[in-house]
Length: 122
Image (tube, rainbow, N blue to C red; front, top):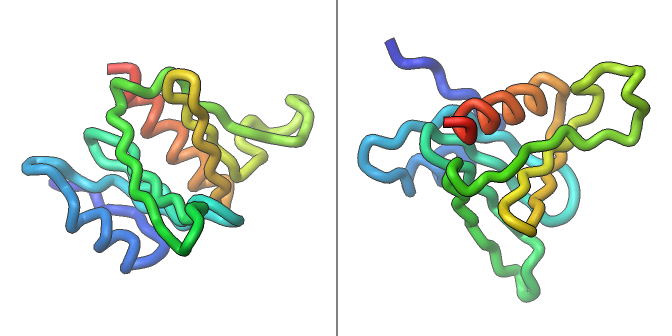
């Protein structure tokens, strides 16, 4: 039985779904907060980021195969005495570049972290 896809905005989910490779499945698509990243999509093959920070209202869709992810971090401005997932930000490290995405909600942060860690470790 297929697992239900989690998403915040249907149009973001549809954008990810329209660009899938044969046999690829969407796991989740979460809306991002703040300037720069529009959303993060997770499939069973890659992380997909929408970056709205380009000049001239240009938008980039960046695909990162899990095999290229070198680390995933929970970003927090709180001490480690608090909850591990107290922040809503995730940093995805790919070589020397880091993509930081702020999400709405601790559950989404934890889900993104765990999915990336699961697939990057294969």
